[in-house]
Image 1 (cartoon, rainbow, N blue to C red):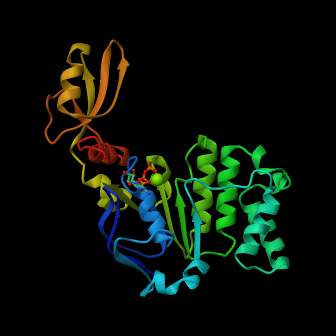
Image 2 (image 1 turned 180 degrees about the vertical axis):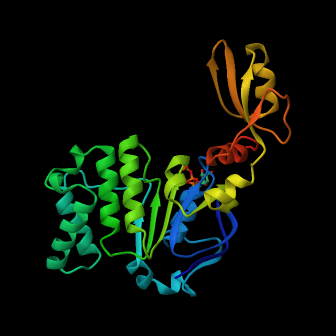
Length: 290
Ligand SMILES: Nc1ncnc2c1ncn2[C@@H]1O[C@H](COP(=O)(O)OP(=O)(O)OP(=O)(O)O)[C@@H](O)[C@H]1O
Ligand SMILES: [Mg+2]
């Protein structure tokens, strides 16, 4: 199974949101990371066939998704960033409605709805109106509806936005469990979401792929360039101006800083193992964000 994106671009009036982007994805979990406005949603909407590209093409197993049409929608599950829920519906009714839209037989739809609401831990609340749900419950319902057609390609746009840490951990477990034999793509700003579950991380910047690789591959690129140590308060501004600061906090009347630099500025600092957050900061703090 392969999803291949070739020279994909999307030009809005005066904004090139996706710029000549090329990538090939096989079975696995992909984390799409990037700051606000780098083009994640635009790329995702094109991958889902709901936004047409200005240039380039997307092929699933060698066939253009536009030509595949309904056949592509049959294997696609999509959880949009702003999911349009039906507040007066109960979760159960909403699932059955979506199942009908997707053309499932009513008996099968009822069975599957029960199974999926169980998997996302909503069975107990299935008869409550969606307007009474918490943000995390709504997200889980969003995932359940996307799974109704047992998709081969599952795309989630910021599925963890607004979730508390416990809900995020639950989400990560859920994605790991259901990712077998699927291409799963999800976007986020939260580094720890992708750090644990993504087989590959795709860093987007200004409509392009800036970096792509496993956590190990990406962090390796910063090895020997991440430093930690104490400085005096009076020197803080100087360090902040000169180096990419990842972290800083007061400690014992001094300031503890973590920063990225090709060379060690002073022997008081010690080299530390890079994390994905360091990679993120290194990309997004050194350039202008559109
Ligand atoms: N319909 C549109 N018309 C004009 N410009 C648009 C449209 N949709 C998106 N854009 C612009 O394209 C760029 C990319 O937007 P997009 O929503 O893809 O970013 P994103 O990475 O998903 O951001 P976020 O993290 O905030 O969701 C932004 O500059 C945005 O303002
Ligand atoms: Mg977005």
